[in-house]
Length: 533
Image 1 (cartoon, one colour):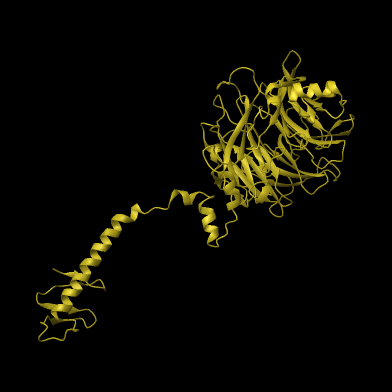
Image 2 (spheres, helix red, strand yellow):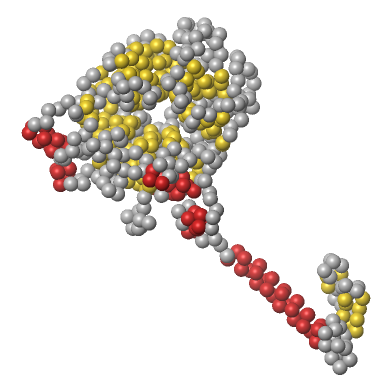
């Protein structure tokens, strides 16, 4: 029977003969008495080679059968186990810190904003503010809008395990610390809410039907959480702190705001989509931007003299410059600018860079970039990069040092004209939602909470939340956040309220997510049945 040689040619086997592939000829097999023992054509050498070939053939078959049984341990795939081992071998992965942080996210309790038992058919919280600046008392504070009409406040006490715990001490257990505290605010439909630290102001945007024809007008409400530092330190106040807060003295007295200011827009049909505040304002000075359906408005002032004015040219009837930003969904300040430069994301997919120091003219044209969908969110990551997210699963990072455009809007397909991003997020799934949650942080993944890289948490259209790396755009495994049994929007909706915040007395930034009528807290740590390293 012919057998293949090393060259691939078929060699016929002849009984009693041996074929030498190097010399390409047949030799008669001889016994040991007539052929040298080392000769290739000796019978002993032929038998030895035949046995070796058969053994090699069996080993190859065994390897083929067992190769699918050899798999990398699942423990090594975990960034906190496999990543540490890889680092021991000298391989440095810059993604490892944020990947390890995300993988270690565990649910650490929730804050309930309703009196009755939690229901799966209640609407999801649309707006919330989480504040963790009160290092003196160790109490966090939260404002949320569970019914889109009222602003409800609650305190957030956490224990040594970063767990939300209203019974850390016997005094706290017996106090009213866990009560809901409603501010004296009632609006028709709250659309956005933001906190401005320098002026201690909460800015609320809302819609209100005006007139018998049901035309829509927008309202802006400003209130200041009441500080506790003005209370007199006497026996009555100490008893009050013990009864209400378990002996602690929070910086804010929730549910007791003193000053409230309400603006009503004279423009019919105006919708305020989002509010953004400037974090580096001088003390006492309010500075914020409002993204509206008619352009961008600025809210500024000192000590109660707040004023609203247009940044983009005011719309007068139907005659306005179509090259100006219209129907703006989101705004964000440039991090190095003293409040003059910001970015605006619009319905038509354009992201404008606006400098308020430039004189406004109706024919002015600012630099802009084209996202491949409506820009529901825009975030400045640093001086050179911006993140944009919106429908049709479009989330990307753009480098503003190149790719900008000027001049009027050109025709054609906006997806084909889109600017080239430096990072894409293929795992972002949001097909049709504009009112959906998103937040960014750089303060995670480092030693002692110093941060390394950065992540973005974004609501997805299946009601879950995804955590993505800002460096690569890859969706990260996020522990309990990825568990739909622990985190999923109610009533078939999407998560609208997401915020990263570091609580007092804690080392790491936590992720807060509003689902249904509760706000859940996720922090880096271990499960109850696991051990700390």
